[in-house]
Length: 363
Ligand code: PLP
Image 1: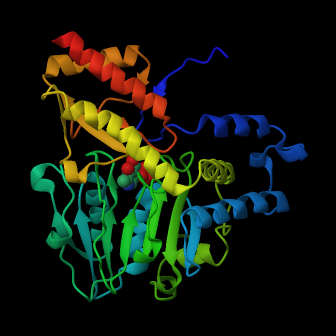
Image 2 (image 1 turned 60 degrees about the horizontal axis):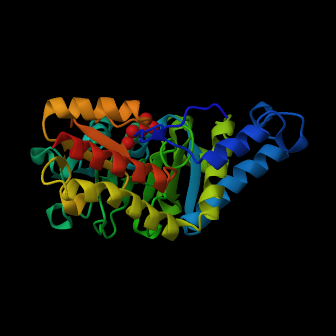
């Protein structure tokens, strides 16, 4: 093949497993001898329905989702969930508590403010979100509608390694940038949601996992399309679903099963991230990590190079060497390597070597 070879460290949309892309390519025009592409088919056809249900089943199985949770495929990205969550679950006279650990929690909070009463459960904004709040810092009231948390902070490169216990108050998590990167006890959450475009597939699909009893008590006076119950009662086929995206998501989940499931994937993610963190920690200050060690993300590794001129040079040379997506987000600056599930170990090894060589050269 004459495809350019790159190391894709994009923050999202991001790398997909090569094998999945090739399988999709082979099935693109004629899906299972139907004479049609999956994206040309009726979403009411038996063939599509099988793809749809298989994706749900794979997600249930990989993530060990208990029976009393619904799995929904929605559109509008994680950003629409910032609005749908309070629309459905923030009842009048109640408050919702938001754990502030980065720019995405901030967006979630701002959106919820337009719907009802919200407050901050904790915030690490004063330290430019270089760590996540500890469980002791988090406050909420027993009467709150829910507590909202961002499990992985894509921009700042921090991640919750433990989740606060919220008792009877449902914990609702935006897991957009670390869903299925590690095993999680789903039963600790009232709801989990994630845009697909990092660990799950292409953009255009949003996964929502919701405890069924919450659906029964959700607000009713909202448009049908924005109600979770509308989608749960129609198996996410209320209107035309993003069928090609759901097909791709199912294939990515199939790939994850072939990799041996979440324990194996988590172990590999740890190995990958540590290749980069080791360089940072052993660089005598040439590279500095943004996140405090206890809050480091295994998905997004944020760091800076000793001085600004060298940093520019680092990014330029990395680009020339085939590393894609290493520029940090403007609010943190510097560099960010996103090593989601589909980023191979070899890409992280190559980046490790590049960083070591660059430092050596700059001596
Ligand atoms: N939440 C987190 C943690 C994210 O990283 C992102 C996107 O990068 C979003 C929400 C927004 O997702 P979307 O673009 O799907 O609305």
